[in-house]
Image 1 (tube, rainbow, N blue to C red):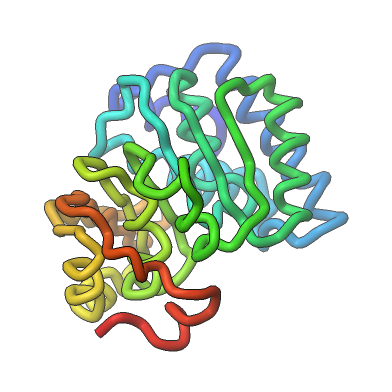
Image 2 (cartoon, helix red, strand yellow):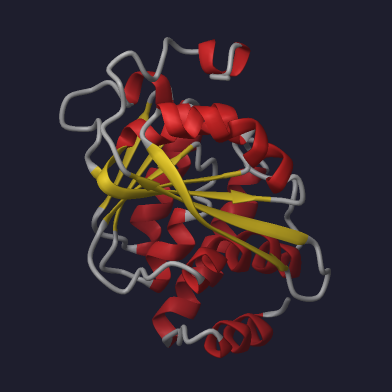
Length: 238
């Protein structure tokens, strides 16, 4: 996907990019590739692939969720900033927090935010299990997002406790979404969530399957969740 195709494809979905926003995506790509030579941020460095599999794929959440109003978003395990930084470029009014367990990725994100002149962003070096237990953080976000971090039964325990009651957890998944969702049914319910929508689509050009699972936070998460770091992955709620 070249820049023109990227711009046109988003415009077809009602997202019009300004010249400044196009420049921000270009700079994002440049910084990503430069920093990737020093640290492992992504296996994808070909420009057209980055625009399709990172930028466009991240923004695809906005095809199904309305990001047009000011809201707080927490992106769990964003790595090099996906999906929340591409969304922030498209919707500058969003307040974005990213939590990631690797300091070097946080260092990159701080540099990136400065280069792109992004305001209303915060980056936290922490484990999601610990982060979600902090006062002022727990159950404080309108939307919690994660893309390609862990299977949904694990991810739900890391993300749902961060969403406020009445908020949402948006999980961006690949072809195994339905299988993961079946295995995560109990965990989602226990943590106070309820699946309201699942959207499945294909990425343009390569036609690989993607799914976006939207979980509404209906009730407060019981105090014992999330459990201590590592436990959700070893012993998912069943």
